[in-house]
Length: 254
Ligand code: ADP
Ligand code: MG
Image 1 (cartoon, protein in one colour):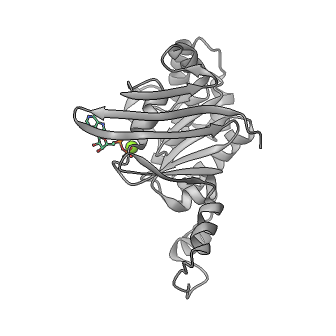
Image 2 (image 1 turned 60 degrees about the horizontal axis):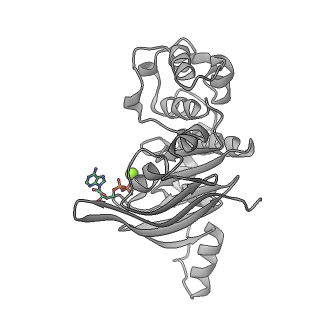
């Protein structure tokens, strides 16, 4: 993996009134990696993401994206990032092809709806309305819209929350695909299995601080080296394995 820093965050602080939501965190994201921000609800993940995305003002610290200073070059940053909208950001009554044309116009970036939808395996849904999609399909569609302006980095804020196991796995495949094409991915999640499978490196956040930052493997090795032992697994599979084994991993109307 290349080690060019594409995001640098230095002593980032965010206060909401007298409440310190982000307490001076620092981290770097390398070009081409899948970087995870993990942590429980309220840890400050979304706040951090939205500041880097230029959607929220910071209270202190420095942020550089692709070398652009957030304080000076917001517009340049906006042009090279893809941000996932919440489902409520889409007109529910428009067809997917119409929504893509709308975004294409907003970004002033010509895009063929069919090609884009094929990328997220929704080519059969071109004429469907957004509100007709299932949860997993809505997430895949919203990820597709982050790709319209051919960004260097995409930001995904808990893209798999609320999805069933198949839909989650399909989304992981999609995120890996996107990364394989050279796009850097920052993702937040509170699912540790997801982070372990998907992320090259993770920052674990709690109460506005980063309490660990490394690859999932290194974090686990470090814990084991301290003498940690997991209670012996009695079974070689769990109920989720049974479910996936019975129902398959194939794409369907999830
Ligand atoms: P996470 O995404 O990790 O769940 P958030 O960044 O959404 O965490 O929130 C971090 C903390 O900041 C939480 O305690 C939350 O209640 C608080 N917070 C988030 N947004 C606001 C806001 N606009 N005004 C006041 N407090 C907020
Ligand atoms: Mg959040």
